[in-house]
Length: 565
Ligand code: ATP
Ligand code: MG
Image (cartoon, rainbow, N blue to C red; front, top):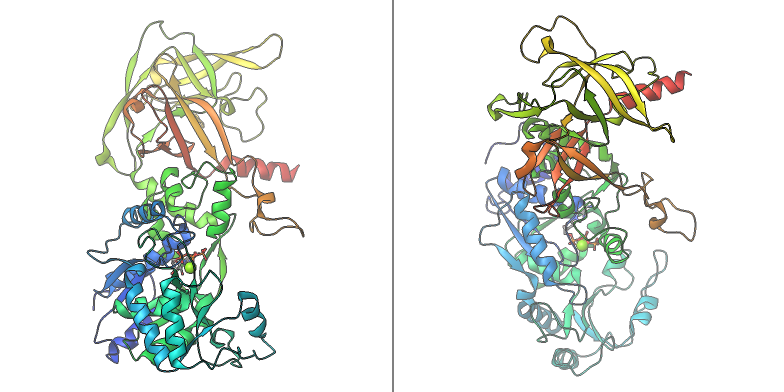
């Protein structure tokens, strides 16, 4: 057995696996699978399942398959298959040669169904879908047996073969397991195994017009692939007796199903149906919109696979549903990016500063460390000149208490450069808006030269106006205003909770070393946050996504001050 991760204590699934290994239940093997249905893009909840399944295989020196559970032709598409493969790979997992499709097992599943019919354990039912629902009963009332339940084996075989041959229209017949219409578990009340659906499948084309239902198909897929531990989410706990029943009746290799709690994240919807609505109804710009909780959205936003894997490990696995604070995901990201994102300077909302005693036309190349957390990332140079931009919010004409940035008559340090002093404020005559500051600098205070006797409390980032590059910056906030987006009044749905300010686009300036930044490159913009180059970037225009802001300590202080007023 491979060594366990030192970080996490054992989770309950590992305890089960350890027991199975001790009892030699699966011949010492650990073989898991990640079984997405290709009917949407993967999201952060899937990432939890991916990390769990591939992670267990890794820890125990076992295997993990990537298997497309493509049993429903009406909602599935090739595009989703491609995106899922890309996303699992990007997360850093490898399924070797073991990329499988449930549709490759359709013939085998059909043979198994014939076996059950021959054993008198499955029958063709002519009840309509509505009637089947009515006959099913409720949690408190037993179901009723279908009048077609006691067809002979011969008749069932004949009808099932003709179902496959396409003789019957959609919805006119189904194949059902013959179990127990009075079972306290509704899933055991003669569940449907096959339905008729004359629909083109993205892989099998028109070969089939009967398609297997999830509960029938899933255990067979696991069995065929020799899976040892079939890990699924909690809502399948009540389906486990059925999973076991099918495999027992067929007397085939029998994996063990284990259920765990799905991930719910605050301020986020996770159901594929809702994500599809966000895309189709234009609330976001596609599946990879950086506000989406999809893997492709997170990737475009600037998330790293390492941060997502770390998050998955920290939340662990449990048996009870709960809501995880999205701040934890952001925390994992900051921790990772802090170690490896090169630092750069960018002024998001510019305010012009003219340094009056700095010679016109002079340019100094100042040296700047790329990452104080990792000196091996080296240094770069940044041009400094007489005219610079600083952040609008870094100047206040009437500074409140504890505001240590620039104000009339005050001094601040310009990062990597000099101490400047604000001498004069220039305003727009009509609007009164501050449009420019006149400052002076102290040539004896150049950064890194150790002659800086004066202490100043504030250090500002800046860019040199003649050298700065224009950049479009996309600032993101949570896509939903409520922690639980489904918290709505009667008659409303989750879309009423969409945050109208989840995307704000601003035109900004960045330092010139970013000229050859490539889509996907990640940076920390000093004092602002982490940013990632968006694929919309062209030779003419840089576009950055704000991945996550740095913790905003000033906002906290400001809040406190307001509370104390
Ligand atoms: P739907 O949203 O359509 O019900 P699904 O989210 O279950 O579908 P699948 O493609 O069937 O999507 O999921 C593949 C695997 O990912 C399953 O094993 C499922 O249990 C797991 N999974 C899906 N959502 C979550 C989640 N939020 N947390 C953890 N695992 C999840
Ligand atoms: Mg599912």
